[in-house]
Image (tube, rainbow, N blue to C red; front, side, top):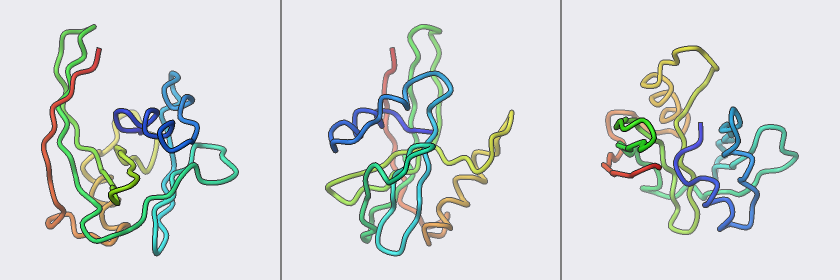
Length: 130
C-alpha cells in the first residue's frame, strides 16, 4: 500500500500518481535492483521513478495519523527509502488478505532490501489526515 503523500511525491518527480489516491487503487510495486529501487504502478510498462540504494537510505517510520472524519487516531509503520533526492514510502504487503500480517511483511521487505529488521533505523512521525 502506498504511504502518505506518495501521489504528491510522484507529481514532484514528474510522474503520475493520481491513480494511487482512487478507491482500491493504492497499490504499487517496488522492484529491488542492485543499485536502486524502482517504483511501479500496477500495470505500468516502465518504472515511474527510481531511488538509489545508498547507505542509510532505508528506515522504518512509525506514523500516527488522525482521521478527522471518524475522529480516530491510527498507527502504522511505513518503509521509507530515501536517497536524498527521491524517496518512496510504503506499507509492504506481499499478498492481498483480509487481515495481512503487516509486521511479517515489513520484516520480509527489509530482508529483501538486504537489511536485518533488528538493525534498521527507526523514526517517529506524527501526521494529520482530514
